[in-house]
Image 1: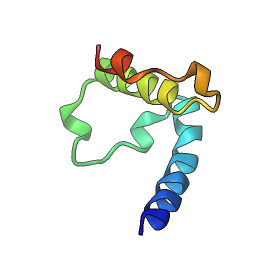
Image 2 (image 1 turned 90 degrees about the vertical axis):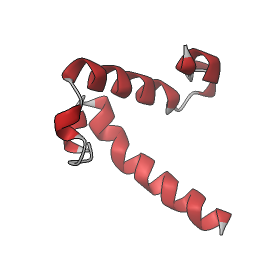
Image 3 (image 1 turned 135 degrees about the horizontal axis):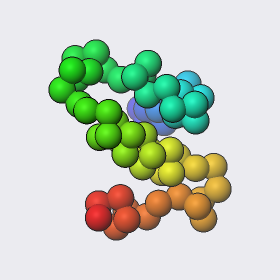
Image 4 (image 1 turned 45 degrees about the vertical axis):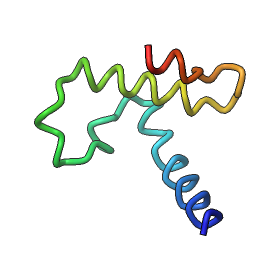
Length: 68
């Protein structure tokens, strides 16, 4: 079961990366929360997400930096 979850989550991340890279976050945002988030919040969510998903592990944010 964990293998299926891992494969599924990897597929989702690979599909989301181009949107994050091109700053097209509104295109992947859940429409149910689209109207309740402002553009500055969306920018920071995208920035943190992109840094957490960095291919180079040494450049990824640590959990303590994400929380801060």
